[in-house]
Length: 270
Image (cartoon, rainbow, N blue to C red; front, side):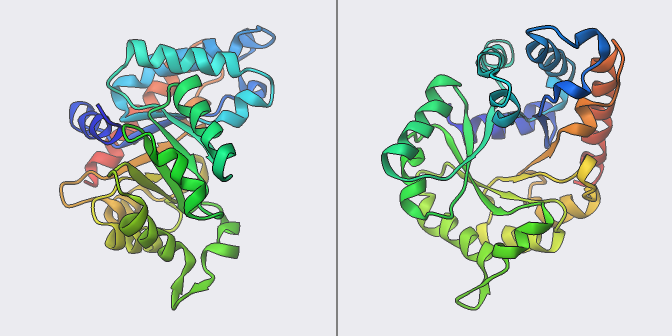
């Protein structure tokens, strides 16, 4: 099953557009996990078990693992999801952006080492920075387009042949790079007008949409701007608001409560 097929099936089976981000900041863990050598695995596994039926995907952010030499725990978590929740795609949020042989190694890292169904990539270096990922036709290549951070406008709004650069990226991915039908785009919930513009350009291509929850993106505006005709088409990510909803031993139950509320809020707008 390809990434796109798995994602489409998860949208339908779980009636959810919610993507749960796994950004494990150990300084924010409950006291009973502090100091445990495998605290990241324990914490994230509990979040996964508590929220799996509310989600359409999980998105581990590699930096939170690599910064403290916890890549082994990331591998274990990716394996845990594949074994216990095989219906849910794993999106490795790595934002890789190199070329040639180096990009090919990053693709191997994402798809072989971690077994991810998709990976986020940076298009700044052009088509040869994306091509190695496209050689894995069953995996997803999710290209940064209009990011949720304010500083994204520094480059993404530059004029490119009469339109903002982010729109040029969207068209390039939709018309030239998506040869295997495996691509998606990152478009922030914090900019619903731009989200709507990208949807117009790319048709039904899936969009990974960060920026709700802790970043303050409006759910109703996000769904209205980004949904496809059938009310799908998006992986609306929430990380910190779910992960750190509780600070006690019941942190997973608190995370589930927020995940359910977020999923339901999204569904009310579909």
